[in-house]
Image (cartoon, rainbow, N blue to C red; front, side, top):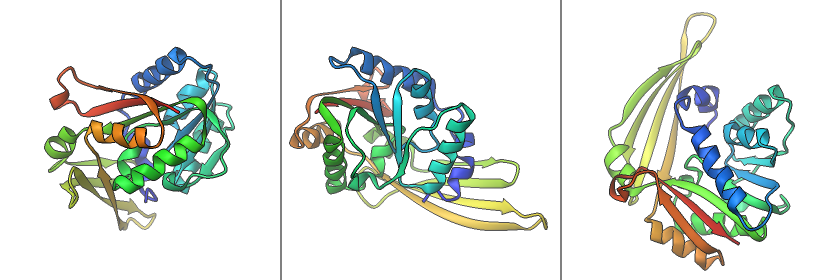
Length: 242
């Protein structure tokens, strides 16, 4: 997963509102009753959110399943003079990372947890790596986006050496989608090599996330939508305390 996508991920995400997301995170961290200095970035990807928090003076540790994404994050951080700790781990089986004042899982990282058991395992691991009173922040796609926006979506993007075609289909599970990506990599000979990746995402109703968080012992669970009318919102933003 992400072996090819990591090459052009930042190009595909260039219009994502990272700065606004980082401001949302920063506001939550500053409002938190306990001082926040050390943050674990779960599913850090190529490190864009991590870099924005590093620029704000936070000590950030990154975790991602993809070695290719972590390599991109390391290079990006180094270019800005940072050397954050980076670890390759499955978010469903976090271990040995220490404890943090806050954990964030941004840019729909949690939507890669494919069923309730996976979500429970993520929440359990997050709790184990939070200090008492620590803050957990994450965002997820909404049911509306999974059922009304994603299905049938198709687009293409071309960089200097790689072209990707991205199609999205309704998944087999409720409130799920399948992202099918086809890559064409140009070689010096002028020939193109094709490769394919499939990414599965699933979401749940906000009250289900609340129930699963509270079952793991989280409190003060709160969420907001990215649209005044929640019925047509595309992203939910959650906060919860250990």
